[in-house]
Amino acid sequence: MRRQLIKRYFITGLLIWVPLAITAWVLTLIVGTMDQSLHLLPAAVHPRNLLGFDIPGVGAVLTLLVIIVTGVLAANFIGQRLVVWWERLLARIPVVNSIYNSVKQVSDTLFSSSGNAFRKALLIEYPRRGTWTIAFLTGVPGGEVLRHLEGEYVSVYVPTTPNPTSGFFLMLPRKEVIELEMSVDTALKYVISMGVVAPVLRPAGRAAINQRN
Image 1 (cartoon, rainbow, N blue to C red):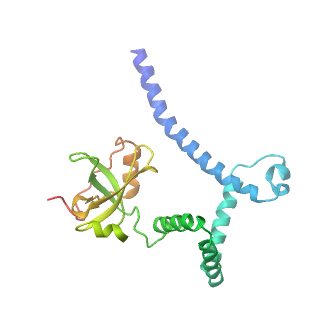
Image 2: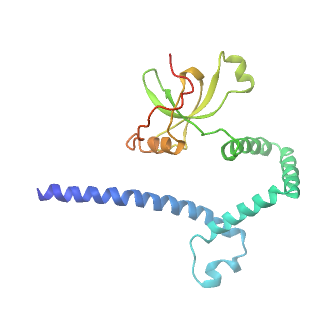
Image 3: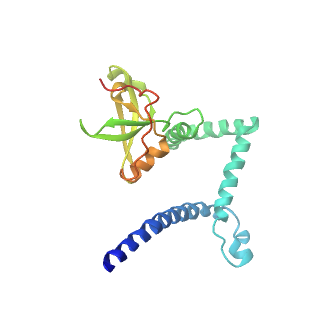
């Protein structure tokens, strides 16, 4: 009886500390990476040289300020002209041009307010019939691919568990894709938790992209 009680207390403690520890670890990793921006400043103005000790997060604040200032400058007329000039310069550099254009197209799709990437959570049959998984709508196929596809298709991203940053890109018939009512954040939690954190069932509302026949 005592052993079961200790085990119960131990598991309860784990359920409290494990999420906190993982959250702290992720935040520390992000802040530590952003702190690297301090290397852009002269060593004389680093907190260690000014105060005698490091201040975690100063680099993160500096990074955020740089991003905001860049956004402010790029939003006006002169900044837009500079961005166009910079992109034309990169377009003349082999290899760099291909990498920059590819990354820019992805970032524009993901972060632009008019983009549609990861705006909808989907339910698809993958990797075989009768097996279902969560996916995210990223757009529609384009270019030469359209010549080889008959009917209406959509582009989807299937994240892996528990790391959703890796996954698979698929092009599926629109009629085989079901749009879910859950938000993208809820769907990501569902994937990361390996199905343990199930979303709350809501009354049927908006119709799916296309229910299967």
